Length: 215
Image (cartoon, rainbow, N blue to C red; front, side, top):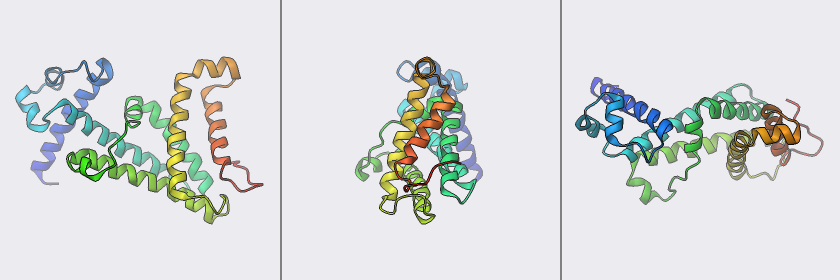
């Protein structure tokens, strides 16, 4: 990376980190560009050199969050060539991500415009969309691996199933975080045990008869 680009990247990261702290503490709506400038120790004029609005800063934060999520998914896939082990590892990585970066995890639930015209007007969110598509493909690859390895039903559509799993897994993780006390008192399970039960139940929908997810 050229020195000018590296410097620009450095300033954008410093500003976005400061904004991130304020968004998490005070909320997006209550945080102003003046607040962000003070927190980052930049003049407001300098702030506007790198970001034209608070929305642009949030989009940049979402982009970084999406990239971090992709690294988590790749780490889960890298643990093994076995699809069931990959699935379990991805589940674990998602739980880890949700605990390490709860604000990011929640932000990624937001919808990114799928039509190209809308995304072309916002290059950062277009990149978020493209990385999100790559993440869907990565999970879809695990499904394909499972079919080839004889774990999953042959008529399982890889891409739709991978996308469905992403929605369901992220939804379960969010629900457990919000209902942890209820699950403990009503079902006698801690969050780790319940999540393991949920992950096994989800994968069982596409497992061939007689195959159990023991890993």
